[in-house]
Structure formats: structure tokens, C-alpha cells
Image (tube, rainbow, N blue to C red):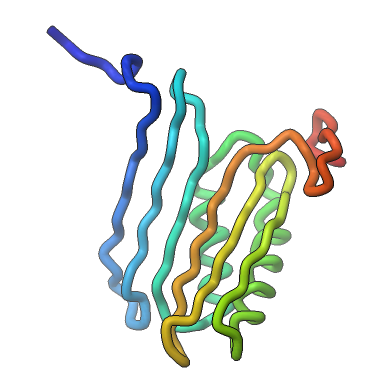
Length: 143
């Protein structure tokens, strides 16, 4: 008897990377799906030195590579700038949290200092049909 995923209510795919760059201690991504194989969220996590440019670039590239429904090529720079700003705010702080929306994608970031030079940065990406203030989005993802 063959068993296939449709009997599952929800499931996750977990991808753990083997860091090969000095200064990166941990990197992983997790995709979560609900009933009917509907995408729920993508979470990407880095434990690394606090380098805002590097973190913003790698996180934005990871989200772009996931090719999520609603992602537009123009979204990369907006997301990169926002992530870089958040990582910069983590300098001298113990933790930064934020929420950002680009098109139909909602991002929640946490950047927590582990030491003076090391942080854990996690970005959770979900689909949305509303702006941050709850306003419905138009067909092109604008509020």
C-alpha cells in the first residue's frame, strides 16, 4: 500500500546548511505547509557575526530563491534595505524585532545578540492579502 502526503494535515521541510564561510555558525531554512499542501511560511535562520550587509544580502537572496507566490524581482532591494536597517539597529542592542510587507509577502524578523560580535537572525515569511494596517491589497499587491 502506497501512502502519500494528502493524508497529512500539515507538514514541514527542513533544510540545514553546513556553514563553509568563516563567521557563520548555523544556517537553516524551514518550509511549513498546511492542509491541501498550501504554503504557510518560510523561516530562514542564521547564527553569525554581526555583519548587516552580509546578513541582509543572504537572507534576501534566500527568500528570492524560494520563488514564493507573489514575489517580484523588484522586491529584493526593498527587502534588502529593510533587513540591513534592522541588522544595523541590532548593533549595541540585545534584540530587534520588526514586521515588513512587500507585495503579497509579510516578513517578521528577529535579530538577537548572542555576544558582542555574534547574532541570531531569523526571518519568517508568510503570504498576506492585507497591508500592515489591515487594508486589503489590490491585485498587484498594493495597499
